[in-house]
Each structure stands twice: as structure tokens, then as C-alpha cells.
Image 1 (cartoon, helix red, strand yellow):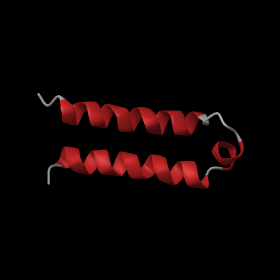
Image 2: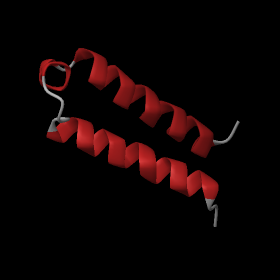
Image 3: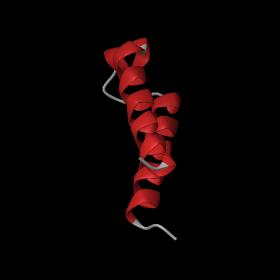
Image 4: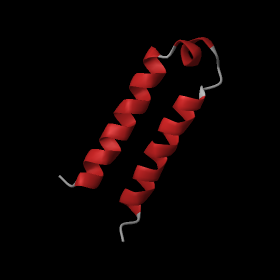
Length: 53
């Protein structure tokens, strides 16, 4: 298992955990700034895995 796979899984886990535990994300339909950042990290990791250098 590569470190990129680990990074992708960790980013996904962090985002999902945040969405389940953040009061603002749970109450509102709009994600909070932290959720947006974590989603961006996850998307970047996913793109990096899809297009390795």
C-alpha cells in the first residue's frame, strides 16, 4: 500500500468524521469552512492518486 493510498484514506476519514461530529455541518445544509478545507484536501489526494507523476 502506497503512501498516496494512505493519504487518500486518511483525508476521506477526516472529512467523514468531521461531517458526523461538527454541530454546524450537522445543523446546516451548508458545510462549515473546516469541512470545505477537508473536502479540498480529500479531492487533492484523490487527484494526485489518479494522475501520478
